[in-house]
Length: 600
Ligand SMILES: Nc1nc2c(ncn2[C@@H]2O[C@H](COP(=O)(O)OP(=O)(O)OP(=O)(O)O)[C@@H](O)[C@H]2O)c(=O)[nH]1
Ligand SMILES: [Mg+2]
Image (cartoon, rainbow, N blue to C red):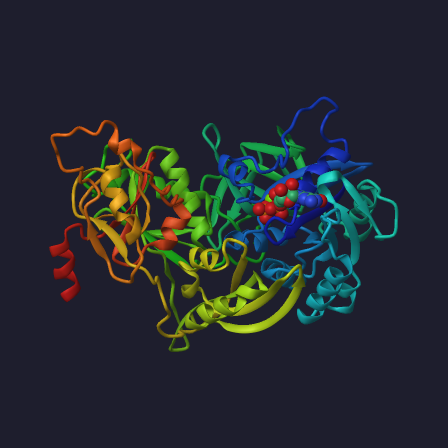
């Protein structure tokens, strides 16, 4: 039997998981000598590369001595936390990375809790030890405390620690040792992580943990084989979560090595492979032997906590910039998203309106960003948290929030969070004049908070949060403080009028931008909305002042990214998203409509 080790790489966002996997690929010799590859090679899709974050967990395999090590790189951002839980079921060990300065962060807690509950062998990697501000001792203490708090067994408490600078390919077992390469890490993976259980002589059982799609072969399941063997051409039964058994045939079996995928004929217990041929495959399904079909325990898929409404674009500028604009096209696209993305859901809630739910704003903006790149045009409403009734009590999601703020600004931030129903849990000095403050807060209060937080901390604050649980509804929370500057005209903006509007607030548009009545052109410095005219030119006069309009100096408009815009809008507002523009607008475009609606 093949000697196999299966590991996942888990951590808080940006602590260096994907970079560490680069090093494992490189130093195991899995990349050929002359093979060219990019940094963070596993972050293969466009948005992952642009944003420098992992969105989908992905697996690879390396050979080290005579072992095959299957590695699953996971996303660290809290919105994609659901992936981590599923991935952990596939592995026997986990590399837990912790940044040597940042230490234990919300998502570290989340992944460690899941890992301990599943009884997986941990290897703790204190990463980025090259950082000048690194404090390895403190961070190791934090990890011990975390394990203790989470109820780790004595065995789990006795974890291996490796110190690393993943980016430089450096690792060592003791901070006092000379810098070495990843040899100690490879050895720990082989010696400390148990070999996979299961027997290739048993009836086949493989559980699917992620899905892929290929235009030629259709839906692809990626699965760990827990027992028996699976070969190309095998007739199998697919055991679904609801107990149904679906007949099928493995039309293609795919193995992993480095960044390559290759067709293989057979694979056996312990390994991780991909297969095609079973069109109804879903995450959590078990591929079984038709003569002895025994399903594995179903997988827990995290329920969505946040939803937005996608709608057909009905703004006056609709249809000018996008290729796909109809309700049918949007529905088709959402349907196809849901076939591979188990963490999201959608439902039609009216003519041209779809409620899309997921784990957070980032997950939803990634979908929206992909759609606009594919040529879609649509509207998105303000995100809403999903409420749930638990034992007759209205409940809402709560988050664990950690902020790092300059000491002299912390008072203001704490006060603001208080108004948003946050409960402070701890406050510790971080050195270099920063404080780390932890809170528990309704997820609802975090919508729209980030922009305010960055303003309040002059851009220096860092915030991180991750889902805790559903708790009883906490009542009304403070929302956006400022009103909107709303255009009262259709046309093209002119510097002259924008100049006049600058001291009313912060503008979102520059000159020569198409606007319409009801479109929001900026944030008002006061709490009420203000109708403004951004297209007014200078009154005609006989004396021509040549180039006067161009000579006006305007403050650059606030650049509204999709996320910032989504956070900013209130319930009576919408985002209009096209391949070329992100506009903010009122749901009701004319002032009289808005008034009429307000009265209702
Ligand atoms: N100084 C320093 N920076 C590092 C080290 N390892 C990774 N980084 C940097 O940290 C950043 C994040 O690295 P990634 O590998 O993308 O982190 P990740 O954990 O995969 O991030 P997510 O997948 O988004 O959660 C990148 O800019 C890396 O270059 C290190 O050892 N030292
Ligand atoms: Mg990553």
